[in-house]
Length: 99
Image 1 (cartoon, rainbow, N blue to C red):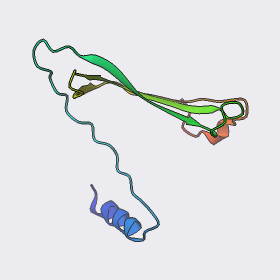
Image 2 (cartoon, rainbow, N blue to C red):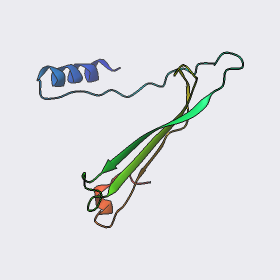
Image 3 (cartoon, helix red, strand yellow):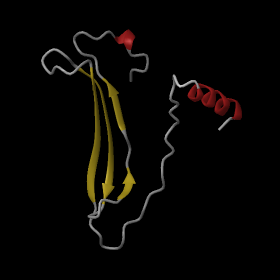
Image 4 (cartoon, rainbow, N blue to C red):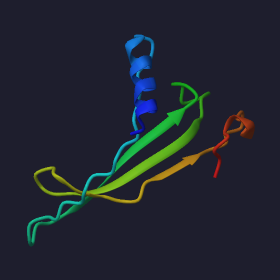
């Protein structure tokens, strides 16, 4: 990481007012043992405008599929999906990164 950026991050964290999140670096794929069965799982994240299922709306869906073995070991992380959604009360101007 750029030394200037690292210094800025350290300054923010030391203030006690901020936490700095760094970009996730993809990990390597693990090859399962020969003949071991793999399953497909999905990590699902749903962002909403609130907690009331009657009046609040889903505004973003994100999914990360992965393969895993019987012992729970994750072998591969597949292509993620993320999409902003426009509900009846949402304005597209609120979503600058809209596909």
